[in-house]
Amino acid sequence: MTESLEHKILWTDDKISRLWNYYSRSRIASDLYFSKAYGGFVLQRSQLPASASLRVLDFGCGPGHIWDHIQRFGKKWRYTGLDFSADSVMALQTRGASEPGFEGAVHAANLPSHLQSASFDAVLLLEVIEHLTDDQLHSTIAEIKRLLRPGGRLVVSTPHAEDLERETQYCPECGAVFHRWQHMRSWTEDSLQSVMAKHDLVHERTWIGHWGDHWWYGWLFNRAARYWLRRRIDPHMLATFSRPA
Image 1 (cartoon, rainbow, N blue to C red):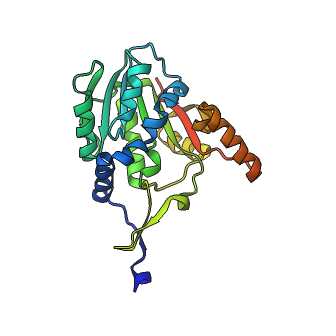
Image 2: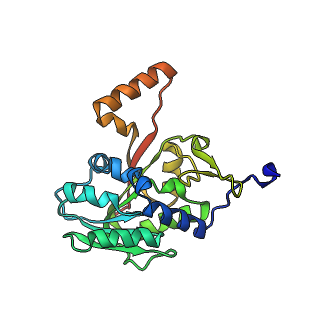
Image 3: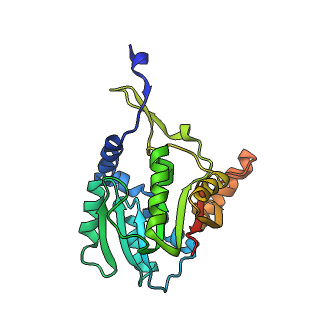
């Protein structure tokens, strides 16, 4: 009987929204958000000009942890968050409402959004692209291209060559089998560049490695793991693309 209940979850917009609404309210899950832990390092490696007056869109912002890093890194930047989770948008709007440089958080029920075309100098797509279905993937990239001004830059971070089964979980109540963080696909440098090229976004650079290398103990641990496993493990990828001028 139990075995007959086991099934891979079929992700719908409603299920995805419910999951991320829950994570946005969870104190423990909040501490595990990628942007909270590594957002500062992402901004440094993005090579976006910290001293410039940029309009920046955080696409898939969640509760907006990258905003905390932007306040220290890009003090002249003007920040907007966009997410499909109403609870996440509400949390970010509450935190940033009175802060200089904060231009609001937008709840997008569907795409395209109501944001003005060619209105952003940079779009951050941080730990988002691995969550997207096929339909969502192409509509998301098309929307980002629409929102970028000519010459504007897209910054993408995602796990590199992720083994999706490592984070698979099973619900003993309903039998659903699912990735803990709702990852739908695994990305490599080639596959990411190929998708972006279909939308005429030009590849600039890609970094692949460990975010943990920024701390000495992370660097030591990662090198020790590489030595004992006898193979290179690079779990993170950061790539930048531009919209042709």
